[in-house]
Length: 316
Image 1 (tube, helix red, strand yellow):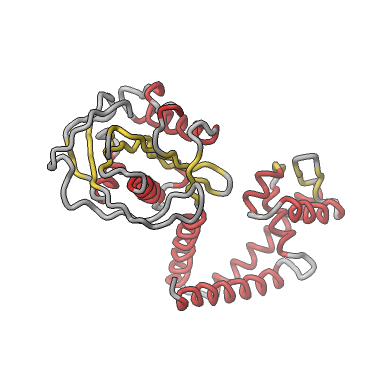
Image 2 (cartoon, rainbow, N blue to C red):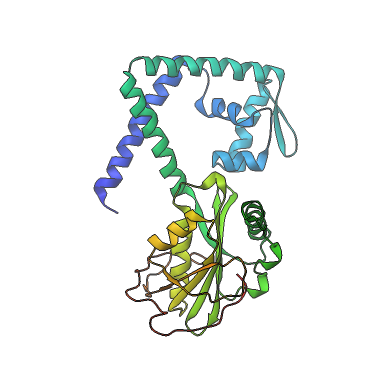
């Protein structure tokens, strides 16, 4: 990581925080700490404490302390695991909303139409990039409930997408995963998954690569695919295969742009109407820690099918 890049990010952060603090002081009032104001917005009508901590990215003790300060002011009622706004809290939040709207209106009023468009477009892009950076991809036990739930959501979406529907019975069972299962998590919520398993010596299959609708457009599908490839290569796999359905056009574009070659069918899975494979190169790059899959994979120079590799497939 270049020092100049780090300094540019830090400089932007300093300027943004300074500008935001000045705006908040002017329109929200100095008597209101920003942390408490944000918490009032995040609580909404009622919030679960665990979900609230995940959204804020803060530990429970700190959030509980801030909620206690709001409770003393009569703005929040605390339960064992929940926080809810009182009528006074709802009124205060509405007041802060009006002040915040006034602040943003004043800010935008100083800009031309073109500048406003650039500002909003830049904010959208920054949000996408920061979300992509915040998603954690980790190897998890195949029987982890969160991982199975992710696969269930994947199956439910395909059941609606395919004219013939989708039989969830073809999903890979935990005991069938002879490779690695990855789970992508954003703010405590699973938003993507994928796994690989061995088909034979040096050959593996990538299955159930899926990104939740709310996390699409962040490059997460490519990130999951790359991590699966690297993990497989570093576990002795030379060639990976995968199958998909013609209706999944975004998946097809991803596989082809990632260096996969079209091959003949290798699986008896009825949904694998198109098949691909890619030759992997082991990177020998250590991951960031136990349970993590990381690194890069070089696109193949020749398809394994052209080298005569033939290993029978199984259910996707």
